[in-house]
Length: 185
Image 1 (cartoon, helix red, strand yellow):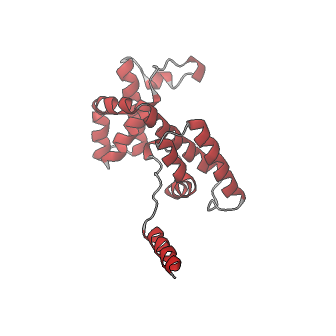
Image 2: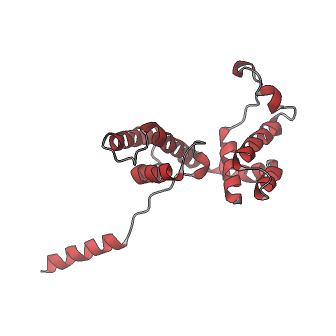
Image 3: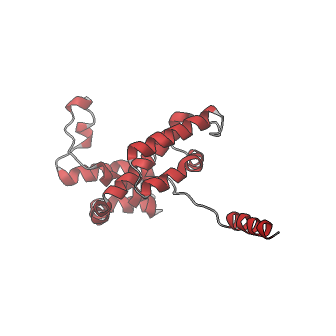
């Protein structure tokens, strides 16, 4: 009887305490990701994001999540979403969390810098003068122009991709910009 009460108590505690896995960082999302796809991805591999936050390597996490998502897809457990849709969300999140793990100071040191660079874009987005996609594009341009003030997106993006002269910028600055824009609303 004593064992039965202990087991029942443990089961009750497990039901009360819910394990919350890490969410997909919204700044890491592919452009076409939907909220439902994000929920499915988090349900399937959110626990792997926790492992990455705690030090698991990118390749190991990506391999593990790809297998889980593929098996879920094979067993019709992806709510109708394709493997490629969900795996891109997961891989981007894994990359973001791994980069945050490896370079936390980079994100801390550059958040104010990026906020200053894209301040007018944030204001326009906040005031509904531009939509999110336009704000994201304008933030990218501002970051490029912070490195090379003569960067002209109309000129450079009109060229064949092999002839473009785009300044070299750490992609994580764009993630910081997206995060700042998303925090605005």
